[in-house]
Image (tube, rainbow, N blue to C red):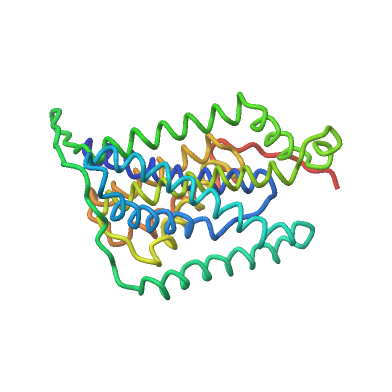
Length: 295
C-alpha cells in the first residue's frame, strides 16, 4: 500500500498540472476549457518530435530539459492562438456557446493530429538511463523522481507567479471583477491571454512527462486525462489553484489504490463515485467556499 501511495502521488502530480490549467481559465473567464486535455496531447507530440530531432545533443538529460522548455513555449503559444481565435470572439456570448466551441476545438486538435500522424500508437523516445532506488518497501525509478520533481517545481513556480508578480495580481483582479479591473488600468485581454499561455505551458509539460512515463503517445490520448483533470479541479474546488493541485493528487492516489483492492478495471468509475460523494458533502469542492450571490 505504501508503494501504491508513492505511485499515486507521482501520477497525481501530473493530473495536478493539468487541473491547474482548467482552474485558472475557469477562475478568470468562467470557461470550462475542454480542449485543455488536447493541449496535453499536443505537448506530448511536440516532445516526441523534438526528442527525435535534437539528437545532436548527446546528453539525454540536457536533451529532455531543452525539449521540455521548447514544448512549454510551443503549447503556450498554441493556447494563446486558440484563445484569440476561438474564445475571445465569444466572450460576451452565452456560456453554452463557449462550451460547445471548446468541444469543437478539442475535436479539431485531435483529428488534425490523426490526419498528419495517423491514429497509430507511437513509441515515445527514451533518452534517460533508468536507475531504480529502493527504500524499504518502496521502489521508485529515476523517471518517476523526475516527473514528481518537475511537477512540484512547476506548481511552486505557478504559485509564486500568481502571488508575487504584477501579472499575477492582475489575474487575481480580473478573476474577481473584470470590469472593475479594466477601470483600474488592467489590460484584461492581455491578462486572459497570459492565463491561457500559463495553463497551456503546464499542460505541455504534463504531456512530455507522461509520454516519458508510459513510453507511448497517440492523438486521442488527451481525452481521458483531460476529463480526469477536470474532475480533479472540481474535486479540489474549481477556480482555486491549491484546490486543483490537491484534487490532482487525490485522483492519482485513488486510481493507484484500485490496484490494491483488485478493482483497477473500474478505476475511472471509482474516481467519479468519489467525486459525487465529496460533492454531496461539500458542493464547492474540498477547498472551495460557498459564496452567496445577490439576485
